[in-house]
Length: 162
Image (cartoon, rainbow, N blue to C red; front, side, top):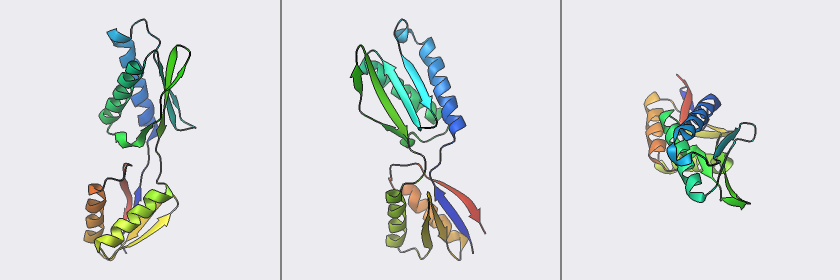
């Protein structure tokens, strides 16, 4: 019976490359010369820490991070910017990286499939949703349906078995 998994995974080597490109770009930009602007990736915590001297610079750096994510063919929906915090002369912002499907999003995916009238089976298995059906074409319809939805997380479809 054909099946597939719906997941939301980050490739951390690509995230690392995007952050490295952002750091290089900051070093070459004229408007950041002489200013303390830092971008730090914490892989274990799934965080990106931005720090600069003004909120405008933080916004610029965040836009650069998003642009580099797009260049590396990663969906910028996996970035979850938190509120800016001031400490002394610096302003900090933490960006959480969304990796994996949380239970609420997985439930939404199952609900969308059931409400669409497609007769496939969807089951939540940890941080993924497994979808099975008798026909491959139905699984492709489910893919198209889920791509149209705005769930706030990037979705990938893998483990497609016939």
